Length: 471
Ligand SMILES: [Zn+2]
Image (tube, rainbow, N blue to C red; front, top):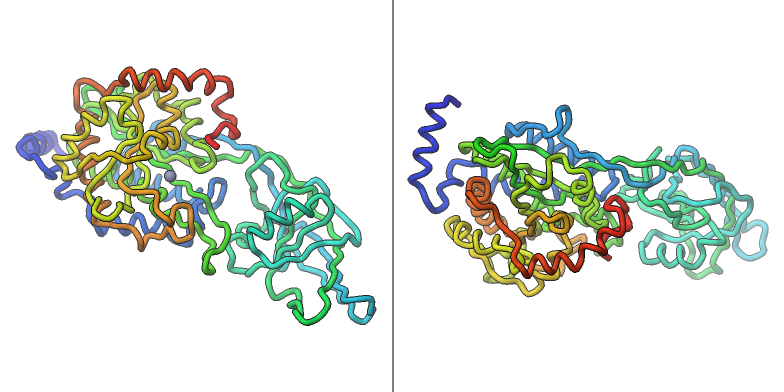
């Protein structure tokens, strides 16, 4: 774009009010639906922190940032990387022979030698790496049953879980795979065995007993790299000051199957916020550059205790005292009935951001409303580590805590895409205003004292301790 056209563009824009900024940008219902559906698709396996699917989603986000014309904050990478403690397990190294007995009849004894990685995979970390003719438990996969077995039997016996070969947990346990967490779950291993390899139990007959002879490679303790994704829109007159627009792109992965569906898609939480970040970045790159720079960040590890944002604050890629405000997007897609086009801030009483934002969002067709739990939720998302560090930081949500929250039923089909589109278009006005306005938002006395009371506690533990999350 030449300077003349750019100036003309800016000149024309100054004549528009209302949702004019969003006109001609990529913030359309179609684009919103397409983006959020990709992030919430079953192929993403619920975007668990530490999963290969989340890494792939991060690469996809980085590619979108690049295509939009954003630049890298740290040359050579779109990522803000940090390690979390975990282990490498190797399903290719598993040896497992199972013996099934019914009663005392030697003829009723059957032996199964399972093929590593094809029939049997290693699920979790254990202290013991081998055993001979040990009693073991064989159960059909069910997360609740498994948790019970881990709590009761784990110290004594290997656990064998029969699982369908298209189940995400089976797929995730293939080959050499990283498992987050510094603690063992049991002293004996939990094996997944592909469904159909072992005979079904005849309900009318005496239940069989099982013994296992087994060995595994020792779990290899490792620091597993995790990735926040970030891209920069460089400002003009105040390019060394930053507005951060963020959302967590992780979710909770797979879990207990509900109606045959074990994938927690996290469509509302928080494929919607991530979609907001992406579409705002793309739209803002098509407009004249604002005064302040805008840093777009997608955090990992939010669901495990705000890990990505804590790490960002612990090792910030831009100076935190140059961050004018953090606008974090959380759950934009499921308004309560009659609340279409409305949005609310967490901790809105703590700063003047709400007062600044209300008329600006109104201009974009979005009404700022109160939400009963908004104060409690202030400490529950990625804005909070910034707030503790003194940066004015709030989350904006345009939805509710619905019955599909953290369930496999949080699916893209249930999102109100027209509502989301309205909200993101409104946010385009707000982010533009925040990046151009003279005075940055400020904490008020209430906000300062709220944060002051929490700060000493937060300072006791290092910010990079994964256990240091909200419980
Ligand atoms: Zn969330």
